[in-house]
Image (cartoon, rainbow, N blue to C red):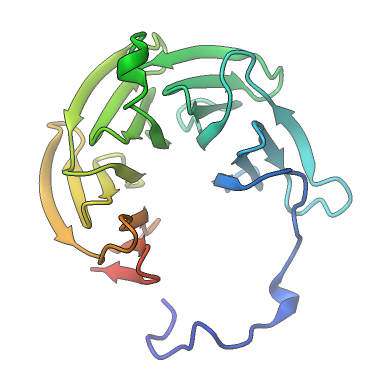
Length: 236
């Protein structure tokens, strides 16, 4: 952990920067890192998902994926229980699982086919379980939804917060889910029972936004959150 006395606005050693990845033509909404493969995925308002090799200085962009049915990707994550796949959520309120090698869609995860319902179910974040064929989505309508990656069917849906659910994280062992919301709370969920085991009021609202991201530490008992109030907080 960095020192609590560090100045976040202090100068930094530019030699730390390995590569600057350029390729998207609009805002980048999210990234997902595959540590074992030294690769990452990014999704952008330009309508594409891109696969990168950050250490490849000459041609870091390996592939680009554009959906034939959906428009703008809103979030992306690697499918963790199967190699060679990723899932992307779209502003159509659907998710698509892709084969990385062939670029072909494998499974489509749909919340609803009703256009009225779809308009309220915008997906802010998508996360995959580390060991199970399970995709978890955070929605504008205060819900968290769970999908079976093999069948594409929704297996559970729950009202998780009092405002839009903006962020998700699954602990490395796959036992707990962490969610953040514009209601200013972080909630920890037991994934087996789908019950909330702890709630923390973490950030102040700013322009109707509050918590923008949450994370588990990969090996220590820490969780972290980032808020619209310009703060990053670490909890033990």
